[in-house]
Image (cartoon, rainbow, N blue to C red):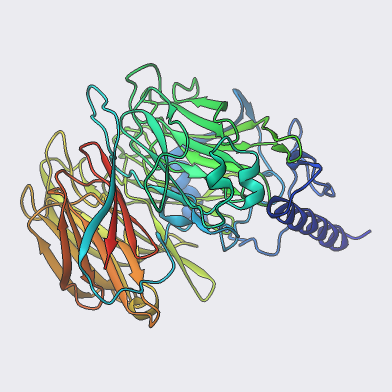
Length: 554
């Protein structure tokens, strides 16, 4: 059999298995699905590794230039580990090309909705009246240091569970019988994960107690599996961990310690919101210890028996800045990694963006963006070419400097355009871009929106809408209050676009996307650093006090 025929057979078999699996989730299945035993044809193996390289047509095959290879060698050294043992290479893990849609199910399963980090809304806005009012508000507990509510990025998740999925869960019968039941899942600074009915705000199951505060956004498995992924941000009660829970019984299945022996940084936080590749049963997340984690989950789900298990193999990409590379060696991946097909992008606290090829876990290009970059990179494809939108902070620069906003070619790392904005910074709170940019769609498809903190002076902010092609400012809003909260795009049935933007004074603002005019405002009591989501003419948002709100647009 030729190699081409082997590839075709492999992809066909994997596609059949995946399709059968998705059908079994929605219907009532009887068999155990074992993701670790998907039938494949071995095309290429590396010694001491069971991973398989499949030449998926969805892969982007990119060859970096000699100059880029030399720049990478000059700037970093890197190793790949399987658990705690270095390996020569990796052929990751069956099929590793991410495809859209991220999930076949209604819901928001990760930070900004997908691996491209490009949306945070479900459905269309139907209301023509832009008044905002609180429908329900739920109080969280309190961390002795960090308080409660939501921090940065603190985005709630939404899942419209199917009847089959709910049948195995320990939730009240009234929710199992309700076909419209949608669950809100929210991780708080008080170290708990909360579960609410979207319609009523009533608690649907007991909170999961982690112990350590969660600043970031958790993730739900996009395959419809009852798996929850969450990272701890602050070590109040022991070293931070990245945890995986079963949502059948809410029991802990697995954890990754941020105190990794391979890490070049001892801080072990996990603010990154993980993503799962549905075809290959792989979880990817970044650690503030500077390690990129790739876990082959080996998921098994006995639907009939209601038993779910995972047996992860943990791969690590560990890099180190070389002496003389001109970098302040403060490692840490605080942003949620972005992926387009097999190309993964992340930025770090040293002020560097890396593009990784998930086929072999090797860097394709590396780029100095001048300062710490915590905001997630957003990806949008134009004629098959991925472009990145990203902005940095004013941190390494000191008390004042410039926040650089860029559009970058995702294949080469070349800058398409760059703007810079003067911002201030405090030792305990930096300025610049913390908010993940908003990619415009439909009527706003020509623009990208950035929000900056401490623009010109401490305490104030700036929102700018830029032309995607040229970087030219289309409109700006000079904000009285700064913001770390990411803007969220909302659209009506005619494609008209609106933006939800919250700020440090507790304001929830709704803006016209075409010109930035403020259409509605609601004042909440405390600083909002978290990111809002939109569903059924409502906004879900958490504040730094101790509450999660459902706000009606009516």
